[in-house]
Length: 552
Image 1 (cartoon, rainbow, N blue to C red):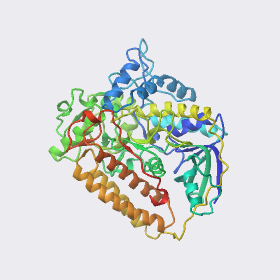
Image 2: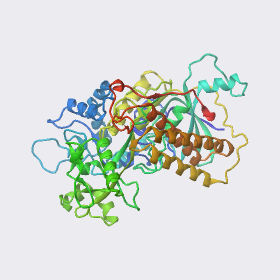
Image 3: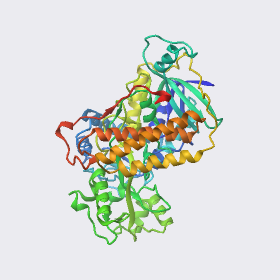
Image 4: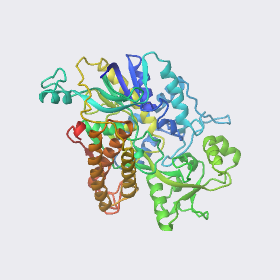
């Protein structure tokens, strides 16, 4: 087994990973590991923008209050204030790298930017680059990272599991030949095992600091706006290593995913509603005013539940967005990517209703971490959607996610450098053992289990939940995890089996978290407990199990 050394190991190449790498490259060698091509990330699909106070009629306090309101009593207010206040300097940093945000067409007084408004925001404060903000940010940051000699990329390479001194010592105590043991030493992360699909071999990467920036896990659900890579890898690895996982019951379902057989994951940005689109039935009847005085600009949890309820009431397969009141010229200018995509599918958004349904979109929970990325394990950091910092609470305010990634990446890098965690450890890494595993000739089993996990989660752990549904899901997912574990042990690993293992692990975390929260709050809606509980105000759900490694 080859062992590679680096000062800083970043797993993931979205905005959180690339910003972390760029900051750390000033202080040492950085390796960025990504399981597909380096540009493939959730960031690349983000349409809306970055929420930041940029206008004189706006204020940090208003942004803070909007975030707290959306978070339904579970935000960490100190974290919210820190992230919101750091917004302008983060935007300036992006612009210094070369990101260009859309500016206002007219002159005169007011902000220079064309600020959008999205659900839950009391002011226009969303900076955007047309309707492909994520793609613009990803392209610029990737270009800068590729130009840095201190940064190397390892593409088509999937992280398998964290390597910790506690695990190495446990092997030594059982008499395995795994190098030096350290009796009583601190349990810390010293690297990661990686499946390199370029050579079909397992590598070990040793690092002084390991950063999980693997994004979310929307592929746990049958219908999602996320790309295929979003399988919750960082959360699953951290849980298997014994770290605390926080608030996994809060899965944000984006209200408006395009309902079309040829574009099942295409997102219709919340900014479309911000520019006046109404949610209506097929006959043009609006319905959001029945659910919230803010109508289409209510927070995402309210809008998604309203759509879900209307679909169940009418039996309709979808609802519709109506923005026919805007001119074609305006829509092509403001939403060029969405307009072109819809037109390619035979829909002119200036004349036609747009069919939409809710779909799994964003994980508000994740690896428990601070704004500086620190986790419960020394040497291991989490940033972006993989982390749960307390910013989002029970429901993320629209366009706060990219802001969080920017701010936390910088705070994390500064802290890592200040603490001097930048030299790869010298200890020997135990060789990867495949045992009696053989190549698999039953790929159909993996595909079947993939579909079964995702269907189970969609049917029983979706927008509206019940104790009976969750208990049924828990039994089925645990049986599936046992089947997947045996498959994992019997056959040589592939990226498919690793991703299947991860989505099954994440599924169990979501179900256990949901069962433990006996109330309805934010994104967690329980038929058995329809109201929020005063006793659970400010109480986070924490799941932490002993390190399981391959035995789970």
